[in-house]
Amino acid sequence: MFMKSEYDTIAAIATPLSSAGIGIIRISGEDSISLVDKLYCGKAALTSYEPNTINYGHIVDADGNIVDQVLISVFRAPHSYTGEDSVEINCHGGIYVMRKVLDLVYSTGIRPAEPGEFSKRAFLNGRMDLSEAESVMDLIASGNEASYKNSISQLSGFLLKKVKKLRSEIIHEAAFVEAALDDPEHYDLDGYDEKLVIQLNSWESEVQELIDSYHQGSLIKDGINTVISGRPNVGKSSLLNLLSGHEKAIVTDIPGTTRDIIEERVAFGDVILNLYDTAGIRNTDDTVESIGVQKAIDAQSKADLNLYIVDSSVYLNDEDIRFLSEFDPLSTIVLLNKSDLYSIVDIDDIHQYFNGKVVIFSTKNGQGYDELKAAVNQLFFDGGLDKDRFYITSQQNYNDLCDALKSLRLVDKSIEDGMSEDFFTSDLYDAYRSLGYIIGEEVEEDLVNKVFSDFCMGK
Image (cartoon, rainbow, N blue to C red; front, side, top):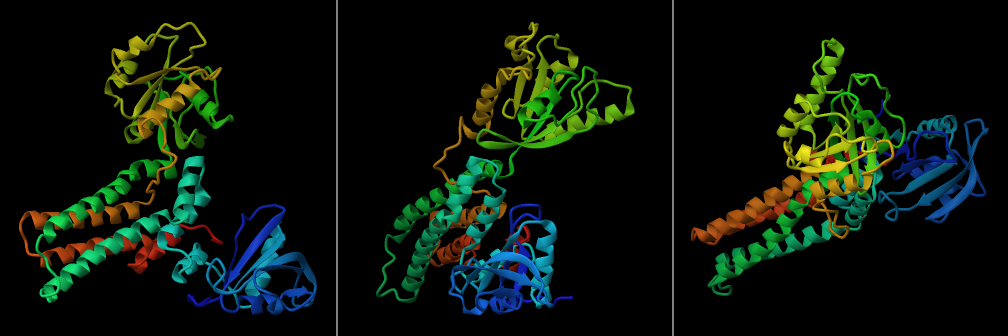
């Protein structure tokens, strides 16, 4: 049982635990180099190597038996990922050999790292701010070009620079007010209210722009929860298979084949769709199928996007008409499927009940695929993502920005109400503090622990 401390030397596998050409074991802490040296056999002691070098050798057990042929990277503080002395063992990527090497590492007294502990140490040692730390996990999880570019932008310090600029300007004004109140002979507050209002408008505009990016940012990061629904045999499972690129769902001519919700996460242009293929919606006496139908209806109500499929070769029935009449055009796209067959139903028929986007589609030959992609972009990203824009993706960052904006608007209200200047500073300091939480310059331990608890092992 390890008594954990932030000063312990820690280790974990930093690459996926699977059969591969190479597997990396990361070790960090004051004693990392000397402890790994106990296992290392090479031309010289590991402790004698220059920092930032890669060295060939072997990992050996207590009896001197070779366990694996390795390359070992040596890093000296503060020039490492964590800011501490660190070692990375590049061994062969087999599951058995990586575990065997890791067990030997633990046998030296090095303890297992917790998820995110390497990045947490990088933050605590000043190697990255809190927003950059969050972007590391976003980068690892990115499933499309948009989320990748946004993560790179944040990792490069875009948000850090923006927040630091705002905080610097806010604290300057708060300090000026404090100085003027303490020393009115040398600092004049005449006409200051008008000047501060102009500055407040600028700050509020910058913060509001970041806040406004959150909805789209969260969709870029987490994906659009998308429910595929419709009557039985209209092509729901075929659409799931088409979008996912493989046979995820069973497709038959028998109504009611899909009984439960099938989930799949797919890249779709610039975004991720979290797809949910549901049971065909119809009245049924089958107990199991009726449960699936109810799940489908419940899923529709919670989805970001409903893809409602209509079979264009069959007349609309009462269920189609009811759902089409109830759907929100801002979150629904109707696919008029089986366009490769003779069509009985056309777009005008749909528009009698649904005043939203309708795409003529064929799950058989892919007709309408690009139009569907454009329709999704139009619904959620005003026609397409701005590749040069930075998007807030963190709920916590969003909350902190909202708190900062609220505090700035309270200063506006104080000025509007003719309050004395000493009322300004409290709210200015609150805005300064809220922005500080984003980059970790105002630290709450629970917040820091929450950020890093979501990280993968070895990072």
